[in-house]
Length: 134
Image (tube, rainbow, N blue to C red; front, side):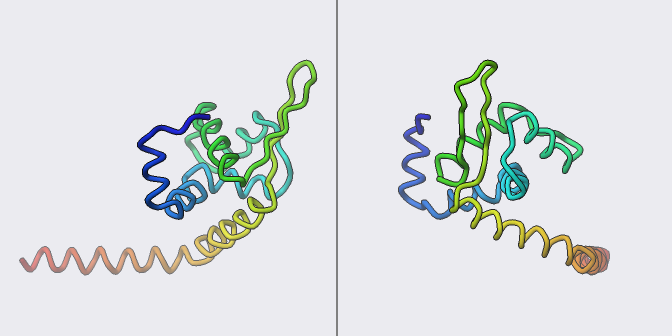
């Protein structure tokens, strides 16, 4: 995969931010968490990821996500020379480490959602009061 000049320049300026974006992207999180369980073939990984959201990931977006995570050393792509072709995706040791961290954040979000919703309601109510007073 060729990296555009603009992407290469951004990567050189702040490589940490880019890796963080890849790991915490909408589809990156779901792919990493799903691959924690076991290796997947492309189509079954797509079905598993689509089970999390009402709006499914396109083949193109899943391919791009997997390629990005593979380039970062988080995902291993194992293409077997059989007919029909078989490609399995799994986590590398580095990917497993990242996925554990992402899963912990996802669990925290799930566990604290009631508190977040309460804070949002309080914020919105206070904002409405301020705007009516203005």
